Length: 453
Image (cartoon, rainbow, N blue to C red; front, side, top):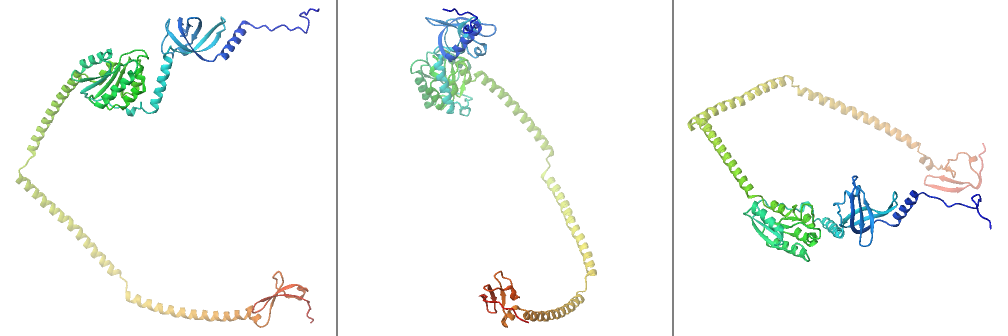
């Protein structure tokens, strides 16, 4: 048997690739084979690099995988995971080429179990927003002077103690009505909605506080139910939502007329401190007293000025009589002067008119004479024109072709309508048209004879 050597042209050595090329091809294969997928596990070996990237291990009871979340994605995470946290990540399976390590590139991270609740929160928020429940024009203003404040919360909640403490400190004169309802647990959302509707139906309070303390999203979920949002929207009195801490946001916050960061803040929004109102009233009273004194002082000065200008009735009558006589004389002079001036102008115009007025009798006689001459000349011209017209009419009658036809003559035309004057224009069997005095006739020529001279 022959042995193949490198010199044999039929022998081809297998291709050789670098490690870098190998890792790149494997990375592309993994990225094509595994699309973005949600993975759940526990955080381990978490490190935050100076560049802002996160490096950690995601593990469960039987396996683990390295993970990296770059700064451009980590800044939108909303929280920083800690060792042992249960999380869910949306990641791309790939390979880190420099070390040849299989890893996942994390796009999104959330706490385990929160994802479904948050998605439900977003769906309900979008639904109610599209129906207009969160529109700004539906929000009602809070009353300026509430006499009674209603509170919907649990009697055992720490939020109730915070609200009562704040109201007792700020507005001890305000009456408080509690509409008890559980703030978490099964059927708590229905109980909260029922308490809100009870407060709306009774209308005992001027403003209603719906509140509870902070907690996880699961603890606050009763305030993310649709029935609670609908009850707040249908409530006949303004509603303040004070659920959780400052960073907690619920559907009830969007549906309420005003959102407060905490239950205590809700109490502060509902009632202005009594000391502030008393201070404002005291300041207003001082302003009113100063304004009244200023008004009285100005009125007193005005009275003194009026008394100095006041005259006795008889003196006022004499002054007015003198003024009336002066005005009557001025009016008489003002009326008579234009009349006299116009009378003078009228007399001058009459004199000028008399000097330039024409002699109408002579002009009328001349007009009658010219009219007689004109009539005589017109009659002579009309008679001469009529005689000339008669002579021309007689001549025209003599030249009328119809009179020639009546004397026995005829007009002969060929098929083209041409008048025939010479027998040479006629041939046997030609069709001719003959015009007579009483009408016309179509004839056929049997023969043609020339006239011998």
